[in-house]
Each structure stands twice: as structure tokens, then as C-alpha cells.
Image (cartoon, rainbow, N blue to C red):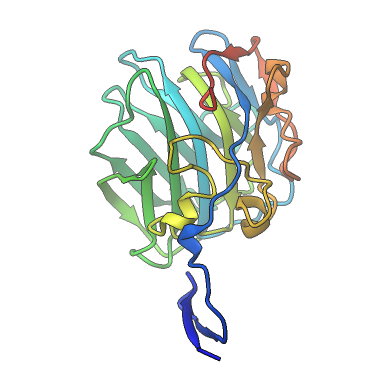
Length: 275
């Protein structure tokens, strides 16, 4: 038999007595999904409690599809608060007036342990973009942000080897839990894994969310994102023609974090990233 080397993302080298298909050749089926429209005026969603089952960690992976409707205001993506209905004060990811992705996180004492200003390229206006972010605060080489297959130049002003406080009293999607800093635009296929790091520099890992043709893929596929990373705390998803408020029901893909409640009324965003 001819021995062939295969290399895993973990850095472990394994030898097989047969040809091995490299992982970057794997592709996953596309998913047909709808998207939710957050109007920037009334609409947002809150958990009203902590995310079920999460613990503090130095690691997280967050992937979502965003359609930015423009405008010169800050726009919240995902946030958490130490009080129900409070302002974001632990985990805060948002888009600023220059369409840069900004992020900050604190530990359980309220000390900032991670802070980023994601520079070039900025989030595109008026188009669907898959945004991928994964962090391991124990290693400065493990802090990547991608827009699709394009790595984002990020300025990390703080990066401390300490656990992020994920055990918060409330979480908000599309606004802070108190309803401020609302998002105007569309969201689809939002997935959040506290406690999990994924090397996004590997194209094979990005393909678990984003096809080579620029479309969302099925995270429930065999060998896909959920099989690889485990059940996410958050998976906000809409089937084709599903009621829009179900976007934050958080009951797809074995999501563990619990349902969010809509304030206002979500509608379906047209087109979706799968159209």
C-alpha cells in the first residue's frame, strides 16, 4: 500500500494506506432560508434571561449574514447585559457609523478583556455579507474576522488572557437589551458558540457556513458546522415562508440557549442571502 500523509486543522499528522481527499475539497449543500427585517425603529429581540447552559470562556465563534440598509448611525448586532432590559455592558458587537465592525467584551468583574475596531474592508452597504468571527483570548494569533473569504484588518486595543463573562442576565439581538442602538437591515443564519474556537484562516472551516459561490450552506449537513462544533447556544433561522417572528425562536439545529422575544414585529427581508 502507498502511504499518504493527511494534515488536520489541529496540527496532528495522520498516515493512511489509501488516498485521502483533502478537507478543503469538501462542500456542503446550500440551504434555502428566509431572512428577518429589523426596521431600526421598533424591532429587536431580547432573551429576558441568560443563555441556557453557557459558561464563561476565553473562546467564542459567531457567524451571521447581514444586509446593511445604510444610514449614519451605530447598529447593534448581538449584546448582553448584567441586568434584564439593561444597556449592553458585557458582550457588545455592533456596526458603527463608518460601517466598521466594533466589539468589546468584559470579564465577570466588568474589566474589558477584548476590544476591537475592525477596519478595512468595512461592511458592504446594500448587499448580503457573511460575517465570521472567532476568538481565543489565550492566543493573540487566534482572533480572526472575515467578510466572506476576505480577512478584515482589525485593530485590537485590548486582548487579555481571561474569560469573557457569558453568564449574563439578558441578551439582545438587533438592539441592546434596553432597546437602544437599534439595527436597520436584514439578518439571517445567526450562529453563536460561546466556548468554541474555529480557525477561520482555513478555507475548509469557512465553507461550513459560506459556499465558494457566496451562498449560505446547511449547518446541519453531515460533517457541517453543528456536527463539527456541537449545538450552538444561538441559531436564529427562518425556513422559506416561515413566520418572521420565529427567527428568534432559537429552536433550530439543537440550539441550547433558549428563545428570544420580539419587541415590535419582524417581517421577512427580501431578498434573502439564499435567493
